[in-house]
Length: 75
Image (cartoon, rainbow, N blue to C red; front, side):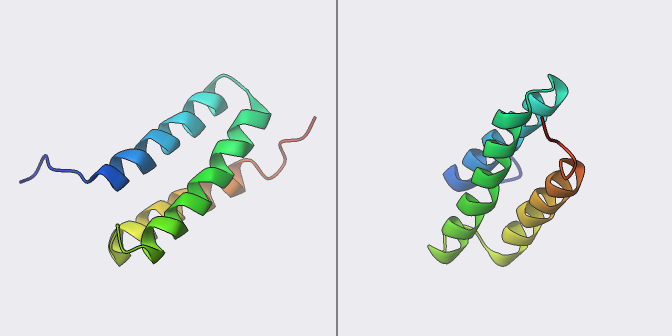
């Protein structure tokens, strides 16, 4: 079942993809909004037990990396 991904993981992957696309196109406000959404949604899915601890840490690491990358993104 290598290709099986839960609905929750697909949702998080979609949010990560949005952040990456916004960063590539230099859309700062949507990138910040999507980054915040990633952190919030990851925590929600973990508390609802829709993702396991390993998956939680994987996406929170991505959230942290995006946060560091975007720390100086201001208008």
